[in-house]
Amino acid sequence: MARKDKTGEAEQTPRITPGKAKNAVKVVRVLAPSVLPVVAPYAAQAAAYARDGYDRLRARRLGIAVDQLGEYTGRGAAMHARINGLRSAVGELAESAERTEDDLRFATRSASTLDKLATAVRAAERMPTARRRAAHRAVAEELDIVEAGLLARLGVVQ
Image 1: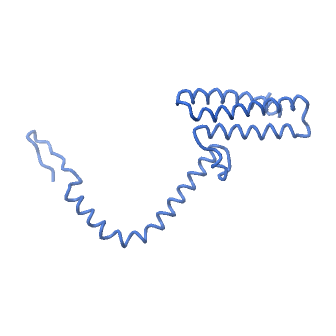
Image 2: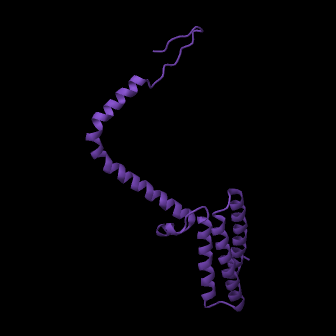
Image 3: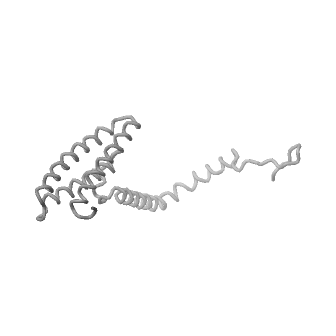
């Protein structure tokens, strides 16, 4: 029950008091040995489901398969995934039966650029936050250029 102070307003009594906390600890000490073996497998299974869902979410965001998550870690994981995706697309363009000499030159130039960008992203991992973000922005701009060129060669965008 709330007490009233001098102004007539009710004072709030704390919900958790030292006595209530001691009683809760005593109850947990008595019940834990019997409840823990029953609850632990369900808790472990729930944790495994949560981890699996989180891994699937991360993989979907990166645009990769779940089993490839170990390859893309760190702050530049999304950049590495994007670079490798572009690298495979450029490789497919170079191996296409309908390629031209211009397509081959573009593929060679792009592969070289993508190698340099991957190195830049790896180097940015050890940079301070502001410099790393600036490096990632610069890499993203270069990747946009390579993507635009690739899409134009594939006839998707004019």
